[in-house]
Image 1: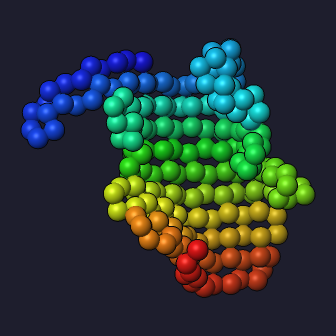
Image 2 (image 1 turned 90 degrees about the vertical axis):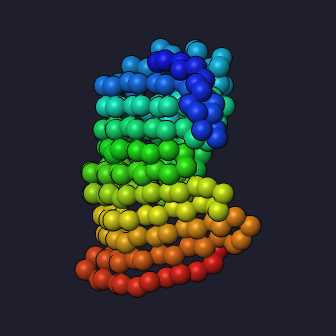
Length: 200
């Protein structure tokens, strides 16, 4: 962990914000439980989240650059393997979740995959969803024009059903949100293909 003081970099925006930089590798989440008392004091809601979800797995790489006067420009890089957690409110539980995250709050990409995993989602499904295999790539852009979330190469195989496709969600500044779905689903041996676009 390091603190980088504000710097004069020249140009129109001469002053660069001071930054908090965090670097970590080969972190076993189960080994961080000793930090629970600190989390309870500094951020009680985070402490509650940790106790409820009981996360496990490994953070292979974590890099965070946080401009303290402009946190919306935070940059990050992360890689993880075999993460697992219990359900928390509307977030379903998961296991065997691996992937990577690159970019910034303003523009980034998430790649994720699961295999032979159970996803408990009480209140939505009566039994945990059994995921044989799943992968997805999500990217986003957030700026003064609005927000865009793009889902590509989504392929999920669960018990008795397979869903493949992609989507794009747009939230223009000052306008209605829009969702476009390109889907190809194959429940059992029956395949369906189509394109759906609609206002929400």
